[in-house]
Image: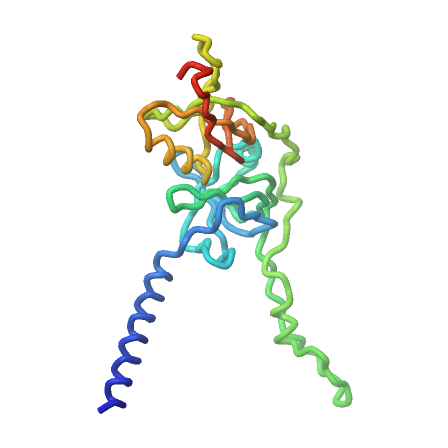
Length: 254
């Protein structure tokens, strides 16, 4: 009787584990914000003016997974603008550098460099007749596994990759502005009734944190930020690196 109960318990536990594993496989967690992409191969596609990157092989930070079945959005940047000018739909395999951001349980790519890649030709097994007295250290099958699957195709580049460096904005204060066109950072006039610059904010964990904090109170919050300033199609964008709430203590206008 006791053995029967134990067996049923173990079977039920195994079933739960199996189901949870299936759920994880279907809905993997996103990779953490700031994860560096150091020469990752994948396919780049475009649809309705937006760009997407799909990895050839899974990438993980130990918890989250970037799945080859999921196309992640590429954030607007000066490097993306350079890429768009050289893009060819016939050959859309690339090796990219940059980092991942995370926003609303999804990953996005901030691209800092790219190179076209092509599939490496499959090497054929050696047909030579080996000396019977010769001892092979590494079998041909293992050598095939060690050969690269893809190679960088420098000849595919029609234009130089050089681009204007993105700028850094540090220690600036302002307010979050949410509109139907997106989320903006409005620079603070420090109590002066003047119209200042508003720049759109790119999707990342810091932006999600700012939105969450602002939802807690009705009055506009003042934030101090550091960010990367980039440009795409003549428009400037901010990719937040740090955002902290600033308390005026009544010294400045709301």
